[in-house]
Image 1 (cartoon, rainbow, N blue to C red):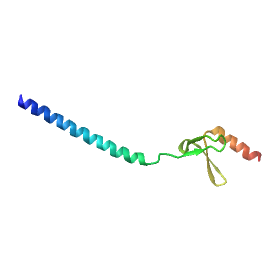
Image 2: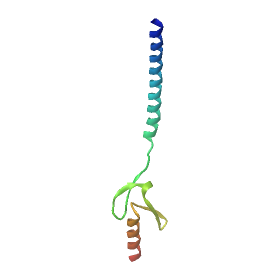
Image 3: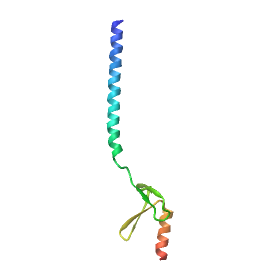
Length: 84
């Protein structure tokens, strides 16, 4: 009976150690990821909607990078540039 209690005590102690170790590693790695900026929000020059830069449609105009929320906004921008 005593051996059984000691056995379960060791199992429980091991379980708690592993659980604590896992939680600490998740907290450390998660803390580093939270400090990094994933992406920036930029404003579409046509419809003035904010969107993540990585999702934007890129166009180079006079050596400057311009990003649009969609191909439709890019096309509207290009049409207005050619009309002027």
